[in-house]
Length: 153
Image (cartoon, rainbow, N blue to C red; front, side, top):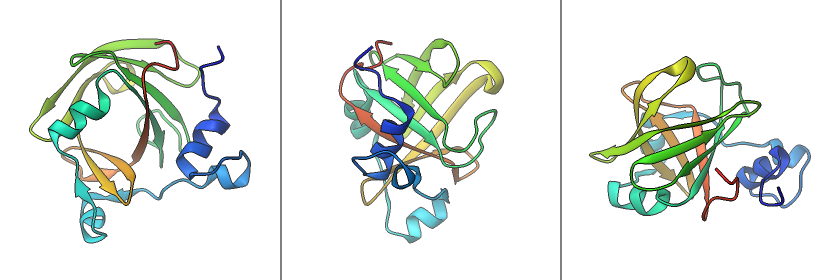
């Protein structure tokens, strides 16, 4: 299990720190799409998303409570190919589902408590990627990518 990242290491990844501890707990603040636009963020395009996600693992951190997830929770998402996503929730099972692109939105088939299809815009603010579920315009998640499948999903 040497390839798996600990929660502290993931939080450090988000904080841009090389150490765990209080500095690692500093996460980006949750924002709205309106706030991101005003701050100079740009929406990530479908082509960028396809290249960024396919064959790689995204670590999504909850910037505030979202659905059953609590602030600071980290979800690993391995995008096996241009259609299949495998998720690993903290303290939960692996879940395989579909993903696709609609316009410049990343769409996913959610299972479990948030069952249904969910499309999100992705915004880049100075290197911080935000996930903004539609149509709400709220951006309660951020993510970082790692090449390949370090979680073995």
